[in-house]
Image (cartoon, rainbow, N blue to C red; front, side):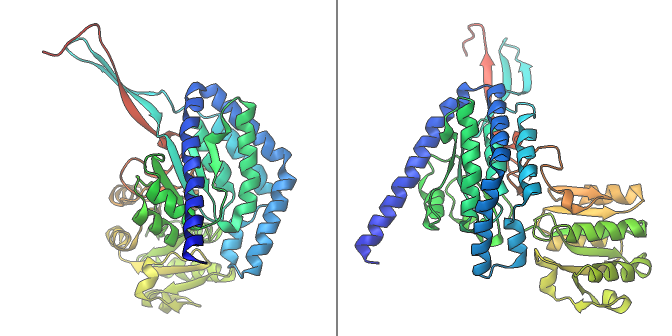
Length: 429
């Protein structure tokens, strides 16, 4: 392509993206004019559209799957991309659940009176225009749009090229729901091109139009967003989640939780990647847990003590402790007590989700208080690290940072606040 053609292509792309941004900001007025009931009405209408167009969505997804297989896409990625009737229904139900949540906008977060007679309130408000960049999972189109509509934010969605047809079909349902409720459909827009430069333009050249960016995808995508964005970012880089089987764990519960945490869906960020076994219980549970994982098709990469107690086990390397497999592979290590488990998590974890399995309430409390991850659990699978499972209806992602939002990012987490001050003629001396 000639330099002239390249410049024209870049200019056209820039014009397209800027138009999206301007339309999104204009749509904020329509969202602001719509109360919580009206926004919920839009979501209920969108859920009806998803159900009514299930066959169209599945046909679009089948085309995306076929193209992905032709490209030799890995099985774990295919699973993230795949929709079936149950997943489409779950998507519609998730949108409905979001519609039924309490309105996060306008909440009075705090209120107090000053000695001079002023009354001050801290009130929840939308963030504004949110750019959401995601890969593979087409259901994110519905989840992200629903959460933004519920929280009064306009959304610019940029799905992955591998799910483009599925995302377009779902996006049409969300926009029709807005139209039915009398809200500007530009409140939810989908970037119309799969050109990777669209992401770069959104991150670097739309700071005046986009208020925050949320990446949801693989490590390379999230790292790129965090490095290139000129606006605030809500997201996480890795999902290196741990299950710690404590000395006082019920062996059957421990086995079942480990199997579910690792294998229910291996390609999600809440899948366990490392299992830590307490030395005091190791002889009783390791062989059973390793055998159960192996029978289910999972490769176990263990330290020397694991390998000495069970088979089949591949020797773990130093890199394994900090690897997010997103596949049927798990690393396993023996640790000497709660403190050692916490130290391992602090060294190798990504701040996502960690679980302890134990009947000892004191040990559980020590673990839950000492581990500084976004989500900590007791006697539960890490696969519950999900906004839907938390009662949020859906999530845009799991935030592992410490600024603004942490854990599942739902509608409430997509608000900021402003101060409303009421007086009776006060002037400052």
